[in-house]
Length: 177
Image 1 (tube, rainbow, N blue to C red):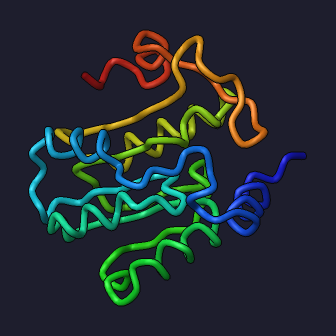
Image 2: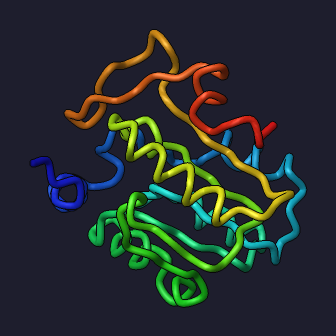
């Protein structure tokens, strides 16, 4: 049986973040989308499947104060915490498989740049959507990015699922705009 936690832990142990194909020196599109929501700087924001992304660094620089980072890889979280140094203490760090994630806290913004498309099992996607709906405020924002139809069929040696807006709506339900 495939061990997701080991797979991602190994990736972040064997390569530096900048060597990974999804590495972004500046997460400009994510920042632009987050800014467009007009969430307040003290609103709760979660970045799921964050890996060692620098998005959290940029959100701190823009004075967002209520940040949570979730990833399955302890190694990825450790890299991000190390990079941030002392300021990492003001961020909530969660090491968890999204299919086992449950939190009572509600978020104003849920950001996922690279996790959902790895959920190839329909039951895993159902669990993700349930976790999302449980964790996001009724008027909260969802930013989710996946591989598009016709794009890559694999990433990091793993099969992925491609999406267009109709397919994404079918997965998430019609409670989202």
